[in-house]
Length: 394
Image 1 (spheres, helix red, strand yellow):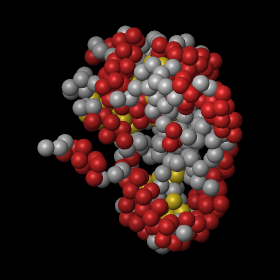
Image 2 (image 1 turned 90 degrees about the horizontal axis):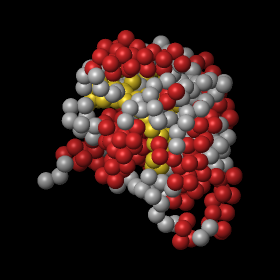
Image 3 (image 1 turned 90 degrees about the vertical axis):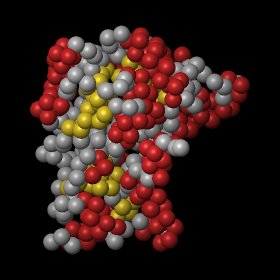
């Protein structure tokens, strides 16, 4: 007998992946230039040229036996030191190599972190709109997901609902800022409120409540918006980071977990993360990319292209009557559908070859995600299609 839950997950891909696969099929039928695929967060901006040179140098000048060999399960200690030093230089947080666990991307970082802290009966709080896989990750660890409904005015956190949802079973809270799918950055005021409530609730219930900061979009911020570094606001914090978006290398699967040195029982938490990595088989992340990120620690792709895309799409769609909160970062626009049923709206959009993702899977019915990490000319060519779609609702 197979796991019915795993069988179900395997037979039905996420809505994002389903649309992405449909887009590839449709492009083969009528040509990629006729499809406006805004479904998946797959960076189109090239990786930095510097990264290419680093990889060539590693391949040409390194001992192959070392470059392609296993590292320590939690990652090469030299690379972990470089990551820890970079965190200190940027945010003033005194982490060490022994607070860092290098992972195969943010998904591995999240699943390891959740697995490390979960016991039967635990609950994890997520804020809508949220990345849909949070539900999969938490439930796979045997915990319950508690969803805080969205504040659709500005997509900051509904603080009252959050406080009312914490109980004795709350083990962790997952925060994603800049947010996928809204693009909103949670303000310092919002973060202070969340952390103040968590500190109060820890005392009330007599146990630690962990904050998991999911940060694959940290570097993708526009207009000098500040992204608070949560370790500096709350002691029991774990940071999940990925280089997928900042370096435009999502297929290489490289990131890390950082455990706050101020966490209660920090050493035990780090040991539990090492144990969870072992149990899940997430040990020794790709060694060549461990070395590459160490040499590219302050590099990013050309983020200005995403800002240009955002500005064009936001300004033109709002002129057409679409409504959304202006994104502070990431590369998503989260618009209100022009009818209550977002799935039906996305179906109508397909008739114009616009591939959009309904917000239902993000915990926000009635909204639609547009991923604008595509070529700028694709955005410009799509605008007449968005205009025709809007006209259907006039």
